[in-house]
Every structure is written in structure tokens, then in C-alpha cells.
Image (cartoon, rainbow, N blue to C red):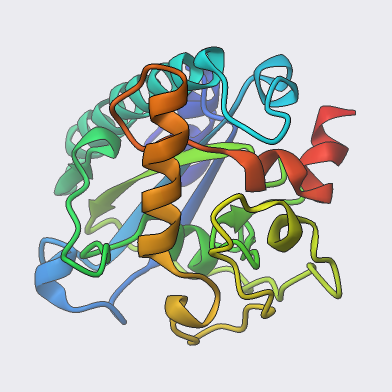
Length: 226
């Protein structure tokens, strides 16, 4: 009854698109609430909403962004409750309450667990990319002491593609291909991205940072949209 397969099935039945399990002991203990494992939950963005992004974000993309974040928080809470009922400790890391330092680095990026669980790789835009949905996804993390093993990590499948680099309105993407262990700053300028996303958000009457142009331009995302 209490198995990873059952948990994954439960989460997908309630809206998750992909679910991964990983050993995260390579991260500092205080960054993962002293828990050794992580469950990564992904939800894909609506296809028609992503199609609406043509060089700039749209209001419906912003609404979809909020909808999916709220769904992820519900799925995270559901996952944590399931784990506790199975006798494990669990701590959900809310999607909507992630805090970062001055360099815009979070204690535990959600995509770290996704990489270790073999769900995807990091694109040149520094976002997680999956074969199934490209980068048209949002994700969250639940830490636990349920024993898990890491899957084989995927290598970057971006190749020589420069679509996101060319499309970025803030010129934040360097165009380098990701390899495990490299610094995010080698891929893109987070501060430049944030500044441009604030400008883009203001254009559609949104105070939050919002863009999505790199997501829509990715060939893997376009494959999902087809």
C-alpha cells in the first residue's frame, strides 16, 4: 500500500504530470530540513497558454503561472500527508514561498531534485527541461526520510541550439551548454533576467516578475505543444 509507485499514482491522479524521487544528501543538511530524500512534483503548463507567449508574456500566462503554483502547493501538502501516514517524516517546500538571497539563489532549487531523479536536464536558460514537456513546467519539492535511490541523471540535450539565447529579451542567457556541477552564473545572469521580467510584468499590469519567452522558444517545449 505504501510504496513509491502508489504515491506517484496518487499524485498523478490529482494533477501531477511527472513525479521523481531522489537522494539529496549531497546538499547541506540545513537546506533540506535534515531529511535525506526528496519527492519532486512537476505540473505542465497549459498548451494554449504557452502558445500565447510570442516575444512577451501575456496576462493569461500570468494567471496560469499562479494556478499551477497553487496546484503544486496542494500536491506538496498532499504528498507530505501521504508520507506521514506511511510513517515517514515529511516537509513540503512551498512553490509560492521560495526565498532567495541577494544573488537570487535559493537554499534548495526545486530543479536540483528533478535532476537527481532523472526527470530532465538544465537548459541553456537555466530552467529544467524535460523530454515530455520541454520547459513548460512548474515544480515543487517535498523532503522526507523515505529511503530512495537516484535515477541516472540525464545529460543536456540542448546541443547547439540557441533559440532561448536569441529570444531572451533581457540578453540574460550566455548560450553555454549545461553540465552537472557548473555554476548557474555560467548559464545566465539571474539579475538581468529579474530586471527584464519586472519590465515585462509591468507591461501587462503585473507587479510580479513574469516573462516565459525562453520557455515558449524552446524546441522541446514546441514538441510538447504539437
